Image (cartoon, rainbow, N blue to C red; front, side, top):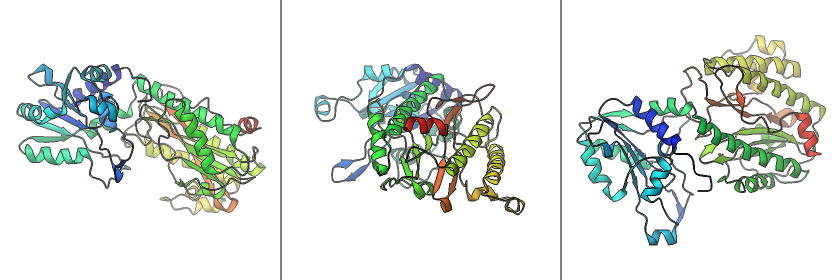
Length: 429
């Protein structure tokens, strides 16, 4: 892995918290992701399943974690299964985790090779009443591919039909949404790498560069700082491309006078950052562009103040909508009649600001978290208002990542990334 080794205390703590939520005499199983084929002998670069990583730190294909806190055999209360490494694998693919290195990484002392999985699983299932299966129930999930975890879940229910089945997902939704201090350090590092990329392109952008040139500059900086690259597919949208919310082609030339909306974040150690900035191709905003930019920045600042313990996500978005409406009235995007006659299910401001303001962030860019439950300290949220104005040829979004505090305003993990319009102009010139 490119990243520095993570302190195993994080994963030991995460497993302890998960086991405390399990029903008595139950076990939970977590599988790594598949290595997905592209065609011929090509594969997509491996990405570890976030839940087994969260609980073990193991970042390797064909890995399995079992948690069985009430097992009569103390050795089997935590078990890791790994592919046995050998000289042939070391030459062709590089060394895999040894049992010793797996313990150093995860803090799990019992490590078996994968060839022993069926034997051990049969033994411990005879001692358990309930099995927790791992499912993806994120509110934005849309999974068309059967995963390794899906195949395991079907097989284990068929093989052990008399066992009770519970879901690990509700536990993980709550645990993963509240970050451990070591997680916050990792996310901060991802944000720091994103900052380096952004400062690099402020010096690079000029009229007639191509959107993909800018994407390449970010990737150069990310790779040079131990990141695998982008935490999500990057958006480099110049001119009217910014009015396509998920524009990812990044294949147009950037023209003088246009704005470029950048929605880009580095990953680090499987954790995400998520930044949006909007900059002028020519190094200077027009009067109108700056007027809109500063209005959105005010929305962002006011929205940030509302992210406090106890806040309900839906109520928060309603309040942000009111602030956005006020700014749009001042900008002349809306008039009083638009607001008075609005559809309450789709308020007038949604014409120019049609997406949400904040989402959980962590191991996933849109991380686990239950939206109808009150916000808690140490949750990480994005704050990302944007106004999209096709008739004026530009769209502007500004986004930071913040940590909710026990009291006071959230802590901004992107506090050092330039955001004020005047500062961006100064740095570009």
